[in-house]
Image 1 (cartoon, helix red, strand yellow):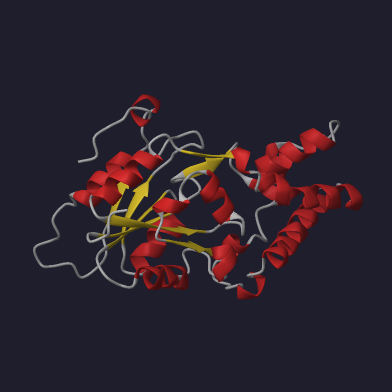
Image 2 (tube, rainbow, N blue to C red):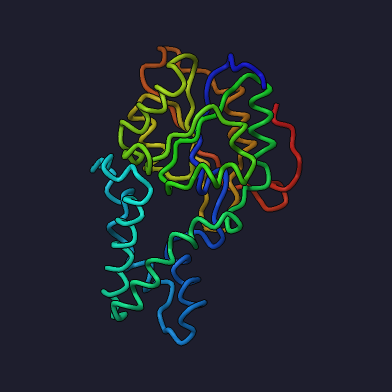
Amino acid sequence: MVTPTAGTVLWDFDGTLGHRRHGTWADCLLEILDRHQLDHTWQFTDLYDALATGFPWQHADRPHPHLGDPDRWWKHITAVVHRALTGLGMDPDTAAAAAHATRGAYTDTSAWSLYPQTLQVLDALREAGWQHVIVSNHVPELPVILKELSLTRRLAAVVNSATTGYEKPHAQAFGLARQAVGGTGPLWMVGDNPHADVAGALTAGIDAIWVRRNHPGDLPDLPAAARLILDPPPAPREGRSVARTWEVPPASADTARRVLPIG
């Protein structure tokens, strides 16, 4: 491994470096219901709307260190899901069974994959002297998912909200990321969420790259983000008093699957 000298890139995970099959918690619940209750009539939109509140990242202004234990975290999530399903009219026992199945379904590592150029981009930046830290609003099992996807050995640290109790864009999420890298060298934040990733980083004084995805199936243009990190536009002549942000549009499917030079 190259000893980092250039700086640190803070990466969002879900939607930036990797993704879950079909994506959302509503999709996960729909998978569960499709497997175990074949005659159900609930649609994705029903579940999506019902799950619009209660998850920790939906209330990022409320720290939750008390949920730092995985079982306590999932007990909270199970209650959120159960409440959402009973609110749709599902009988309590069926709702309890579906909510209980959520942990196993969502954390199934076979449902997770990386975007096509993730490893290429991480390795190219590391060869150029950059180290990588994941800053994610995620489930307690994120380290297991990262290991399965061959990311762990490429990372200097993982700052996971389920463990720390601080969801992006909370300032402490980025403060803990600074602590993890020792406060030396430039910092970049790369993520697909303009609020949690970009606005949160800018408030913390960290340059940010928004790898925009207009639709769930869009691919983030990670090589374009890497090129900005390696060769950023010059700072304004009057100096850099505030952090800056750049927007990178989605990659085309063809472009995102080719091996492209980073430099």
